[in-house]
Length: 432
Image 1: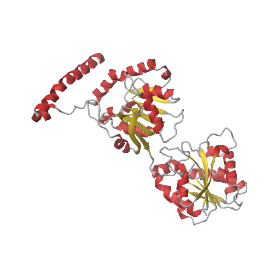
Image 2 (image 1 turned 135 degrees about the horizontal axis):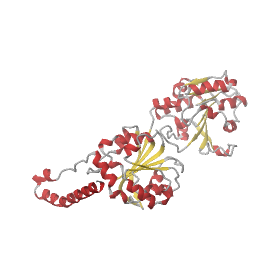
Image 3 (image 1 turned 90 degrees about the vertical axis):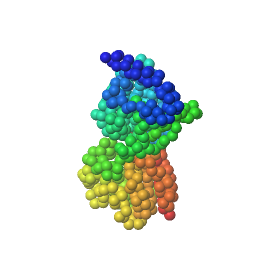
Image 4 (image 1 turned 180 degrees about the horizontal axis):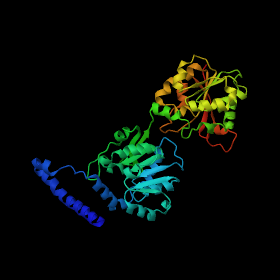
C-alpha cells in the first residue's frame, strides 16, 4: 500500500509539472483566463501531508551546507552553549546537521525525523550518530510529551515551513521545550507541502521574541535563507512564582549551605571596609554569605530574599542572624522604600542576571541611591528565559557610580574544584 501511494503521489506531481508551463503560457496570452488557470496550490490535508513526508525520497538527500549552517548558528549566538548542553534538531532528515553538531564537539544532541527511511540512512551515512537519539514520527506528536525546558537550544533548518496549519500547536511545543530557538528557512511561499509562516509572529504568540534576523551567509556569499534567533522570556509574575517555590529547579536553598569558600572570597573583596559597615545582600537565599560575614567581623548585615521558604531555612540554619533584618519579597518591592545613603554596601552574587527587565530600572536606581558602594558578582553572556542581558558596568556607571575594580572570581576562589563561578566577575562600584 505504501508503494502504491508513493507511486500515485509521484505520478500526480509529474503530471502537474508537465501541465504547468502550458497553463502559465495560456494565462499570459489570454489574461481573462488567468484566474481560472493559475490558481494557488491546493493545501494538502494533514494526513496526506504526513504520508508524503513519511515516504518522501526527498528526505533521503542531505540538506545543503549543513556544516556551514551550524557554524553560522554558533557564530551568531549571544549565549554560551556548552558542549554537553542538550540540543534538539527538528527535521533531521538523513542527519547532516546532527553530524555537523557532533563533529563540532557537542555530545548531547537529539533529532526528530518523520521519515523512518531517512533515519535508517542516517545511521549508515554518519557512523558518529550511532548513539544519538532520534525521535521518529511527526514532530508535533513525538515532542508533545517532553518536559518543559528539556533543551537549551532547538534548531530547525528548512523544516518549519512544512508545518501544516492543523499542526500550528507545534510552535507552542517548541517554545516550551527550549528557551532559544533558531530557524533557517527560505522565503515564505505557499505550496502543496509548504506554508507561508511568519515564524516571528507564531513564536511570539508563545512568549518568544526575535533577537536576530539576518541572511544566512555561506563561504562569504549571502544565500536565500534567513536565520532567525528567538528567545523566550518569562513574565515577571511567572518569574516570581518560580523563585518562590520551596525548591526551584537549579536553586534549591539547602544546596547553598556548604560552599563557604565562596563566602570567604566575598569577604576578601570587602576587606577594606570599616567593620561597622551596614551591608545588604540582595537575593540572600538561605543566608550563608550573611552568616559568614556576621561571624567574620561584619555583624551589621541584612538581606532581601524573594523565597519565604529559603528565609525560613535561614532562621533555622543560622541562629546568629536572629536579630538581623531579612526582608521577604523581590528587590523591586523593598529597595525603592529605603532611605538615601542608608547603607555602606549592597552586594549580589548571581542575582542581577535574574532581574526581570520590567523591574531593572527601579532596582538599579534604588541601589545607587541608597548605598555608596555596590559589589555585583555576576556572570556575562548568560541569557535564558530566567536570565536577562544586563550590562552591569554600564548600568551603574551611567547612574553616576565609578567602576573601582573588575575581579575575575576564578582568581580569588581558593577551592580548585569549584568551577561554578569561573564565568563570574566581581564588579565593584563607588559613588563619590
